[in-house]
Length: 125
Image (cartoon, rainbow, N blue to C red):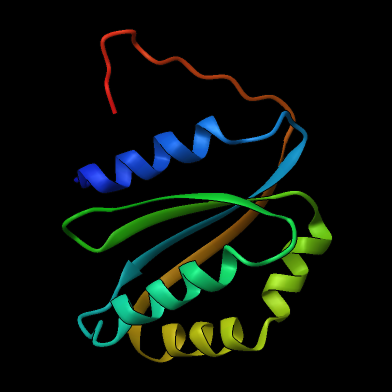
């Protein structure tokens, strides 16, 4: 999977800011269609909007050259996840995704019970 440097930087920054478990992860896997006009702009808008949502903790995302992507967003509670799902602008973005931007997507919600990480001492972000 090809991941841009900026995506890796976001992953590293997000993981270093995560709270101690438990918290929740929404795992969104998808494949882009051939028509992604307007997708980048909407993704930017949703990134800005979700960052303002109560209970939102962070996000990691990567997409390969074939359009297959995985985005994992982290949340403090199931109620916070549901509030984001009910957000009207997010609902509009999801509708456009179904109509235009995705061949498919899958959503899974999981409770993170344990988390740990490693960073090599020679790695500089």
